[in-house]
Length: 359
Ligand code: NAD
Image 1 (cartoon, rainbow, N blue to C red):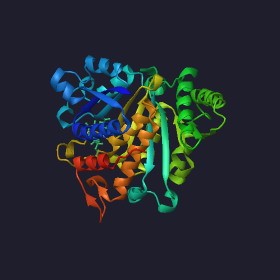
Image 2: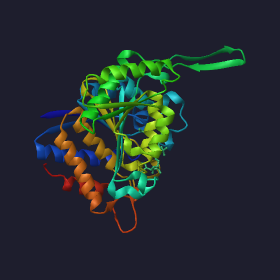
Image 3: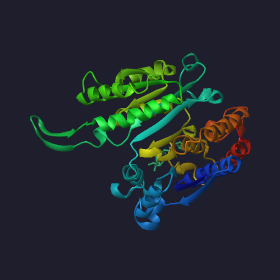
Image 4: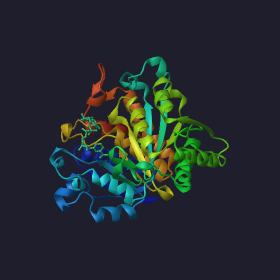
């Protein structure tokens, strides 16, 4: 098959890590007889420098025509003093909105080889932790009506949490579909004891769950979910939640893995279109030094293969190569520990490419 991919390397370590990710895709293409065509696009600080704006229209248009988008990271010291609407990070929100990316998927996995990086006790981690947080990305309080007004105690400010049946239905369906490919469990997180929008959320999730009789569903209030993620993270498979709760819980879940350079993410829209990026930023402190860990971006490629191109075997081939290289003891600086072999960005990319084999 031929696939057209939009590639936004971005700023800082973005171009270095994306280069390794594309090598991985090329190897998958060779082994499985796919052809991937890349269109490199500007967004973030480099777009401000070249075009005077963080998200040029041609970038948006090219992304819309592609099968999926690969993003490195945007931002850096150079652009830190610009006004809000001209900041590189504006490109991220712009892309999500323009591309209709309403579901954010963030896996939090503790790899056997990197258990030391986890801040939790070994008896809590157990054999492994593998959680997928599915966060609604374009609704809720971040997009609701907001403002300021005069109140009884002086000026007051308000933000509004609103969810429609359609918005909850589509994110719930994504969560159940993902659970079908994983361990058949969805935990829906809300605050239905207090919030009306959460009560609707819960009703709709229960309704959608009827289409997925093989998937177990439970519900947690968000405060309890935050606690359970630390107390017993192994109980979770897929967590589905609203924009704000997901913002907080996905950071909490990813940080219990302790390794920012390892974690990928996907933002999905309709018809399996998606944008794939590492969860970390542009790491300007190590940019251009061959120190960045490319694994989060390479694992984002595995998510792209799985969720946008429906190429499960190919996705697994990438993930297995990453695990094998870690097992052989190779580490970039961020995940280095005594007795392991320190390698740079390029070498880590090459090792993974050389290890990928047809399943
Ligand atoms: P960061 O994630 O870029 O870096 C935090 C720390 O983690 C740094 O010490 C960095 O060296 C390290 N780190 C990050 N990724 C790494 C990797 N792959 N390998 C090894 N070490 C890695 O976060 P920050 O320092 O808060 O932000 C830097 C810039 O990135 C800012 O301009 C910020 O706005 C931007 N940012 C962009 C995105 C994005 O593009 N999606 C996300 C977060 C932050």
